[in-house]
Image (cartoon, rainbow, N blue to C red; front, side):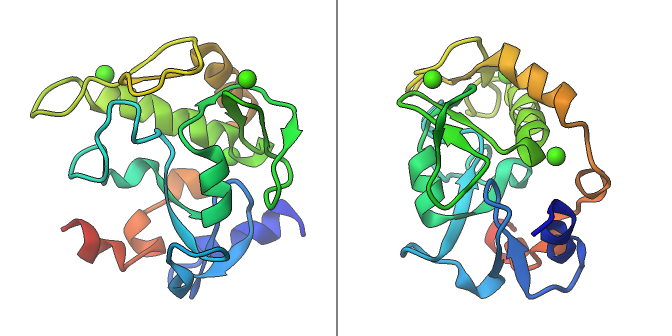
Length: 181
Ligand SMILES: [Ca+2]
Ligand SMILES: [Ca+2]
Ligand SMILES: [Ca+2]
């Protein structure tokens, strides 16, 4: 399956499927759930980094939420982003280790730009945490995400695609309107 084919579904406004983040696999949009084989919403800025959970604000910010296979989402967990070396079961092209996650080349820049967005959007006002970048892993529950130097490299290596530029999340996922507003 070529990357271009993987992208077809998610660029079509009324598609019945979503393309899962990291793995690039297609899944029915109705396959949302918590069981193996389902997809759920990945908080690309790990929600424990700043401990904001799923409450309004960073916890529901569509700009860093992506449908992701439940098991892949679980393996990513709250790891910071860095280059890794162990392949991820169910998501070829991604790698991990005990303290970090390396996204597939197709989405490296997407990840980086989501993290950059979150760090600039959330500045400690309106009872939201001040999210910031640093150059470390194992940030735990601190409102910090790493590694900045690696994310900058990923941003350069994977520039914005037409899909990413044109993306309107409410066209891709009309059901999210009801969840957010
Ligand atoms: Ca590591
Ligand atoms: Ca990309
Ligand atoms: Ca900030």
